[in-house]
Image 1: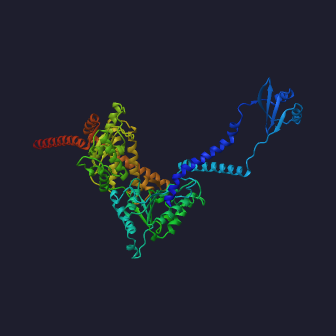
Image 2: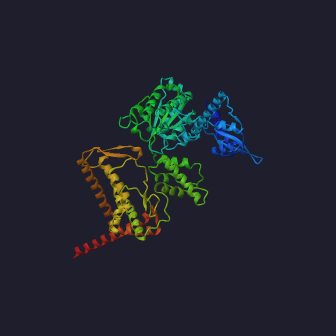
Image 3: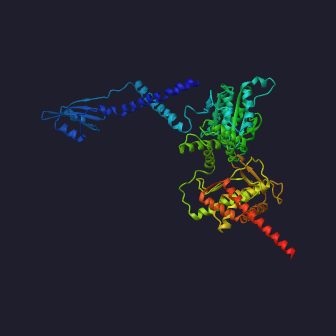
Length: 634
């Protein structure tokens, strides 16, 4: 069936050109042929001149036609042909007879009525079909392949033999999801093994997780491992401006799937059509609601034994309709979370597999610096590292390229032409060293990996990068307070050294406030409110939107508690910087000269000043002991 359709589609341009040629020929025949048949040697004149010529006896011959009069004038032995428009003149025949003018009534030859009707009908249909095919091929195609020949068609991409060669081995960092999906693959391969015991094939599995974690990749891997046809379509493809088309597309999709069973249907971003029917945004005739109802009925209507498995992906599971999530439709909910440390290491290795690179790259080190990155982010980092090697004229990617690519993805490219005044550059240097110094002087704080004052395209004028030595899954109250104290270190350095407050701390303030508010409202880390949830979160996989669920008085008390947490952290940061003021000056001056320093360089300078302080302290204690001994002898 599909081959016949493809063969027909090949001839559409030829048919279109033939019909256009017929239409053009018809237009020419109607409008241009009469002008081409017009006699070239005949002159135009007015009717009064014609009458005068008849009265003078100059007209020798005349032809009376429907709308014109053609006549011949002989004067001085020379014959001239004229033509004039015919007018209502009852005396015309008498004039011609009196002057002995040879005249005749000429009638236009008429076409056979049947033939005329056939030609006009064929030409009309030719023009209509040409216009229809033009809309189908050019206009509707730009509207998403919804042409007049495709109304009600699903438009799903069908991978019959291969899904780009993607297997489970190409998907790293999602071992739990692969384990859950591998059972579906085994069921499609060996259905009798499960039906023998009475088990049924799950009708659907919902993949949920943040963007870029590999939901679509996993679906393709399942189809490739199972070696069955794979129907891929986006949820937005069902939403049409014509009511009923979305439901028709759903019907067509399931019809095709049943014909090619066993197979897999993958609906990406299913929340587009699967949102809750709460009555607020939906009406009875709403196109999305009709599409959802059709999807629900189709998922109930086919037999699991047919071997049709529905996979769907979303990063907004909380917005889906409960009827869509119940067992019997989507039987399994498979989380596809952000990868952990080992997962990030595996993903980096997978994407770097086909890239020429130097030996001995420490992927574990790169993975530690990319906490919170998705699989798509890591793939982008590897690609950026390879591009950087090419830009620098090398044929192999190095570990330094990967480290730089991490910063490019997280903070943007370096703004090499940015002109910053020496005064502002000095403020930025003390600001960043303030962060680093406060972090280094706190227990259980992530070690400083890098400090730079080179501006980035993300808008950062500088930044301090901290990298945890091990993966953390829990955050204690002490960890949260340490993070807030570190964030206030930049502003504290500005106040301590320059006595000013700049806008450079805006991002620090935002992050610190977010952590402090979460401590109060969601983590129960304060004695004032205790073990009470005062805030709810939605869209957890898309950054998380929060809303307070408490009285106005409680909101006021929450604001006071947040301010107290941040205020205490700010005081602690200032105290740390005052106690290490010499190290602050020394590291800031070194950073101003180098613009970028590593965590090792930072710690070497800090240890040097710590040892000096210890020596001074030991000398002071020794002097105090000596003085006490002298006083006792006296």
